[in-house]
Image (cartoon, rainbow, N blue to C red):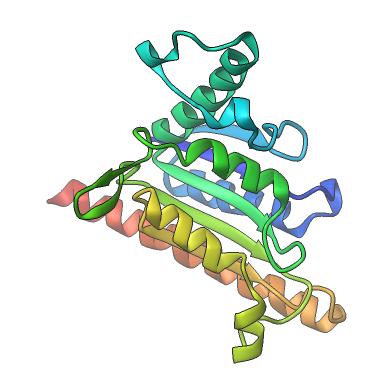
Length: 216
């Protein structure tokens, strides 16, 4: 089994999402000790945002005729897509920045959401190709967004990730949420305790599914 661990917070050691992804991976390895982990820090090594050169991603024989810049951009996209497709589990740290996700994480998504690689269009509409994977998102927020209709309407973080991963064929998307982190010490402590329980619950479910599959 391969696990792709992705962080996107720019806060380094002060990041709650980074701590949560670290905890998720540690818990996963406890129940899946043979897992091979690949790490990607998008705050340190993010792909460039889409441009006319990077938008024309083509793999294999279709890459002839590209400029040197397009070839370099093509190589970046191909490496990221291949890394995603090779993973069985993807753990993503996704803090809420201005009601959405960090631009570094969006740049990564723009590179891996590639026609012919992770999705295709059919006569019945789009079809995801990156199937059979689990995504666990560490969702962190300074305020409260999940407890009211107004808050949910302002949130384009979890809703966006659920949509885009579903579009490329990943329907098993789980969230470990810590919100209200900027609303005082008590709220922060409560949020982290709740997130810890969610981490244990998600990894326990995965372990039970593996045992059931082995017994079948």
